[in-house]
Amino acid sequence: MGAGDVSPHPYVGMWVTADGHIRQMLLPNGRYDEARGERESAYTGSYQVVGTRIEYVDDTGFSADGTFDGDVLHHAGYVFYREGSDAHRQAREER
Image 1 (cartoon, rainbow, N blue to C red):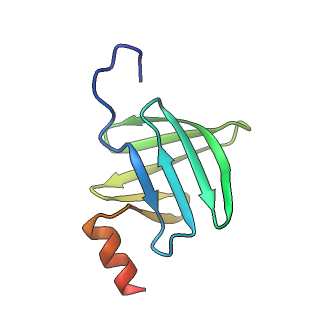
Image 2 (cartoon, rainbow, N blue to C red):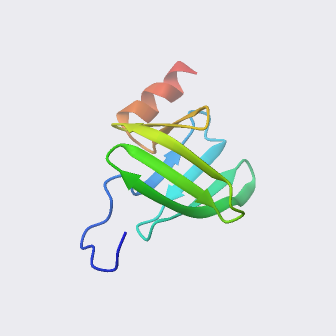
């Protein structure tokens, strides 16, 4: 995201696994902060979204990608849900 961008990316916000163990905050400045269990900021780095594809670069240099499908994010073998969405509620109920 460049300095001239007016509105935040549509996927900005909190994304969580159905069990809530992994929580990934996509910040409007192109950074992310991922918590795992009790470990806050377990992973941090930058991300870029093109269409429905997200590409991550961890602060250690590790890279990964994912794909959005509405309120669902498939990333690194995990399924994340936009926190509070219908998809998230349904995934929690199905557990």
